[in-house]
Image (tube, rainbow, N blue to C red; front, side):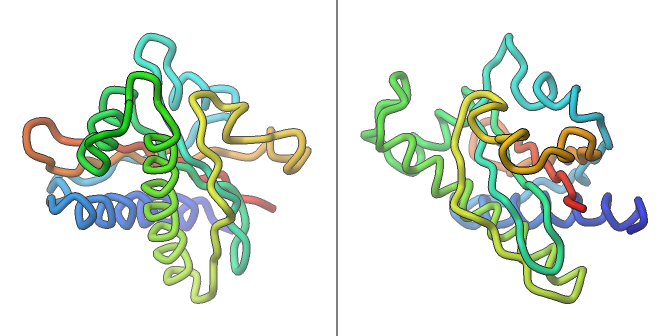
Length: 179
């Protein structure tokens, strides 16, 4: 599979995820084009879960015409604002079960949209698994248990914005292609 297609999948995934979140929030995707980089798996923890800001991420396995791992991540403050917008009585400070459920569903919606966009590009069906929510890489990506070769796979990280009232919502989409 060519490198250009893998970048294309990540960009299509982040655009679809941003569009679905914009629709969910009654907002508009930002007009700025998504940015996509290819990184090594070893750089993924610092890229998605920087120690100084904290993050919340939702990952899922993708199966079908193309396989791999996909995830969406938000800096903690943005995740808290997103949960408050959807479930005003959720306790984001303790990140209670209502907040966890809301964030898991946001990830499910965004990753399902991303899987659909990738499927459209490849001309097949791509289905996400049940989402995994976490605040660190070991919570969301079970590298050793899922696939021993996953640690050697390239990682595509794409970023986009959603124009929400006040500050734009920055989302990070992670695409780890399978074999």
